[in-house]
Amino acid sequence: MKPININDKLALINDHWNPRIAADLNGQQIRFVKIIGEFPFHKHEHEDEMFFVVKGKMKIDFEDHFEEVNQNEFLIVPANVIHRPVAEQEVELMMFVTEKNSNTGNLENHAKKKDTKKLEKI
Image (cartoon, rainbow, N blue to C red):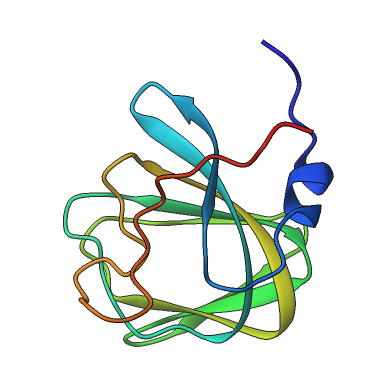
């Protein structure tokens, strides 16, 4: 049991759209990721997703509207809701998801990550 410094963990990430597991919590995972550009529209049929913006600002597109999420804000996308994260500039995120959560939800494509590695301790 040691504190985890969010900024230190995010400093270890040098790529985009490649989530890393920072911790496990009661069947949930805390993941860190850096994003830029837009991700494909997708949904997670059985899982909610929480996006917490540590640095920057992003929007999440839905079928009929979008929501801006600014630094130090979070947004929860309910299960089975089609969405797409978009970042005009690099955004640093902390995400709360289930262990089974795939970053691409119902899509099978090259961006799918298995999230099997934890960040190294620093």
